[in-house]
Length: 434
Image 1 (spheres, rainbow, N blue to C red):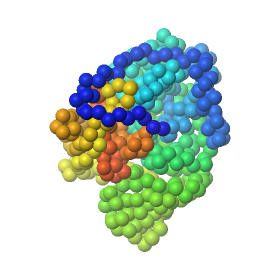
Image 2: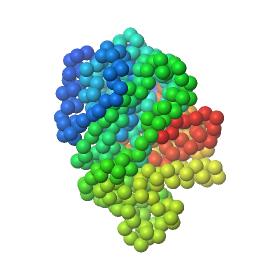
Image 3: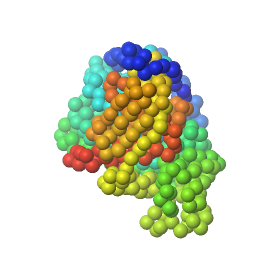
Image 4: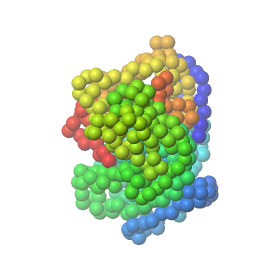
């Protein structure tokens, strides 16, 4: 999928109209049928099936909040098929509306900005549930999983459920990550996909529990490890490109500790600094290939991507604690101010350290700072709309999409740093981590 991009000066973008708020639209039967017909063929290709637990508790005409894990673009198609018999408003990233605002609204999508405070979103969800009598689909992780495990959930989620006062349905997918992991540049694998749909909480159960108890229930529901699931269930991924760009996730060598020298190509992950090579097996394990990899310290001899990524998180945390963490990258800058297009405004420099983000550029016209407590996580992405690896910062007025020249080595590391820095700066507030 691509996005409409237009070259413009930063000064011209400043005078462009901002995105106006509009109430959600209840998708009519025509658009619901259209979506079902559009989504059906791919799900048939992957042999999609689903099972239900406790769904008899949900009345046919009862609006509900659907919380779903986010593994790949097929998640939306899964939701449309499972809930085809009920009107559905979908919480979507605002850049998904660029160039197709009218259509996105007609099919029930509601725009929001990832990891940017948005009180209007709560009102939009209440409007959809109470006025439109439509169910609401939300991906509370907000971004696709990088490493195959859950990304942090907002600590305000328990409070949100108490405000909405509707049944909560949980959907977990199986095989969606294996079919199309974000790091792999949209290369699809031949993997069957399924889902489990579960009635998680009733309005009465929500009101009878504390926010902390609700958050714990959600944390448990969103705890998973796609790589271990693959191994335990014997799911075979035989494609010869399965390790392509895996260095986006595993950017730091477990053997020698060097960063920015990892290469994912074919079925192997290798380090250009020490020469260590690992094979990503057909069942999702990392196996050392050569003597260098086999000599990896025992405490860093990882069999799964998720364990390696967790070690990278710990390394970033240590760098933040001792004050050595820093991102300093030349970037190409795109800006979103409305849904007409994404504006490409020029070059700049993005710095991230213990003080947060500092973005400068456009011949001195742009100077934006963002403090560490601005948000608990980061909107960063691989191969974003086929433009490149991206880090997004900003606020309700404007979003800045930064494309580092060294993109494949920084998107994951920067997201980890944002999450760990938030934890360190605000230790009294919990993030629900999977």
